[in-house]
Length: 372
View (cartoon, rainbow, N blue to C red):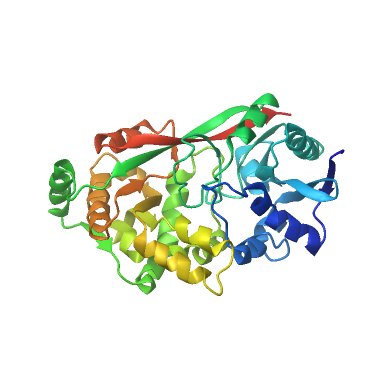
């Protein structure tokens, strides 16, 4: 049967787009179902400002009167305007194991992008660096990090066969949790904290995090702006991300460093909740929320979600200061290991630090690109 490509226009189309991954990943034991309520909120074109701020299209592939693939196309106007690029993005690509379906979807998005003057396409990459990005290319069989794609290997093969090549790789390390921070971390922390201008802030209640949300996002803008494809967060972006991530953040695993009361560094960890999310299977009620909360308490994997150090304070041991605090909290909570989440392959300084504390590279994600 031929493959028909249709733009998502109706509510029925959107429902098919959102629920398709459940069909694609049936029997895939490492796939993590998202919460359906969150998906309908995110893909609500009228309510999510990201859709109105950018050129976007959601597309379904149909075969024999059933959906067999999906993809999103994005032209991030703010990023292109600030960088001088003419780059489109594809994201949320899912399809059955049939290269003709993948080809039909990507051909559509490529033409859509070229018709709008774009000269390059990259992906998978969403509206911001906080959306899932990069397909897993090494480390299949390991537990995915929070907010990471858990794709099949065949989708990577399809992209290669369609002349997509590497844009950038992200690496993920596994760090076994020691009973105490490494001796080097302890000594560096003691040295820094003797200087009374520095302070490590730790938390037990979410309400205490609110005054630091905007300073943390502003620090992200300052330190991440050089990263490939990073989009500077607006005040509205900061508010949206706060609403999205604060419910899943455990304040015990948020560490901030201040210098003369100014936030200069932070690191955020999240207990991996994949077991609970799989049991919830997209639904918070009647039991999904219980499964998710229970998995937070029983998880043995702590995902390091975000972190940054103000440029002028790098190389001064601030990373050791935060690392020591996080290791202590992880050990007390019973985590067996830390998953470092996405780190740029080219960030040798951070990678060296991870390897210095025994980190083992065990997953690799890739963003692909193609000239149009």
